[in-house]
Image (cartoon, rainbow, N blue to C red; front, side):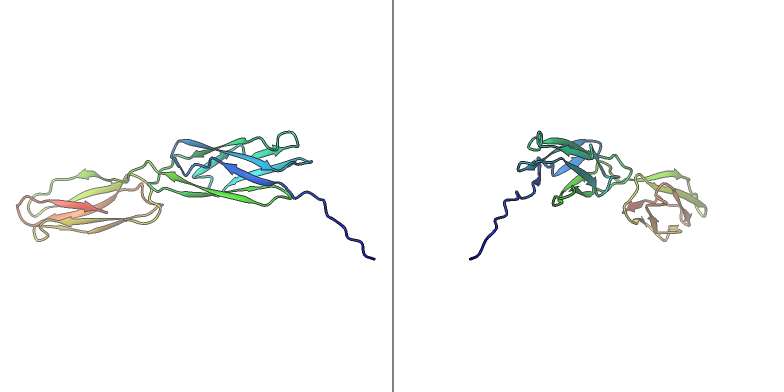
Length: 193
């Protein structure tokens, strides 16, 4: 004859996340609810980790679930950090606990910074003279940010450089362009990026 055994061990609980915001504006907060599905007979400690804490932070990052509170949502606050760049971020979050399957979710930030080009100094250039223009940008770019200068009459007003590159490391340093006026005429120039 044969004897069969039946495994009556309850499956492990599942981490559930609710009310995940799609986006959070810089300087603002959002919340998520986290709990366990299925009764538990022991204590589980969950860790919530931001994949980019410089963009969105979590608080609290440690949650404790017991047989008494496993089915009650615990609130985690997500704060979108106010930064100096003009780029929105997509941040992935992991929720982990010993003996449980990892759960993740994603939230995007909405950046409130607007990149602008500034002219710090303008020196009047007389016919046959040389002057300079100091140009900067308002925010830190996520990658190289190129400003292009175009003269409306290159034969009358020449520019030492028609392209300026601002990087994430030098964005806060103005760059100087030399202009040379060869004809006594009204001039226009454009700055674009």
